[in-house]
Length: 222
Image (cartoon, helix red, strand yellow):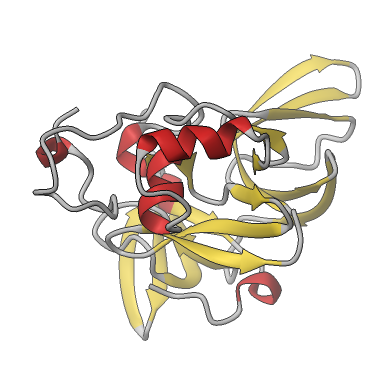
């Protein structure tokens, strides 16, 4: 794709060439993700060109959410855990970019975007990163965030009034705040949420809200 048409948050030089790698279809859409190649080359500086990126990927040392990836245009998005050898990073947001937080664990923070009943005491949770997980208790709601480690749920972060959250879209993307009110909307429109951030009250769609646990995101802001 043309560099001039790429998302503004990609950390690339707009005039360094005519074309740039395009993300392949996957768990994140292009508007909210970047190709693995750009992450390795332009964000982390592990390579200087796509050939070097491919050589790194062919070594099998790159994992995304615990799964080895060798596709250079695989999409990387919010809360993905990138493992490079013994180093781990969590993908976060600032107002105009994705950013990496170095971490010492491999916990995956995943937002529930849908639910499905599979049978008696069997429920499937559909997650924002394109994956799903089966549970035996109907105690999870759309909008909640579950933390997964070694394919097991280790923490539930409920979507509720007073919860700390990260804004994952719109002009306030990357800001953190507290949920102070949820406003039901008619028809198929997403509910709206009032968030207090930096003593300012803002209104955003519920699907832009990603609840977080302050213990793991202390000091994180745009």
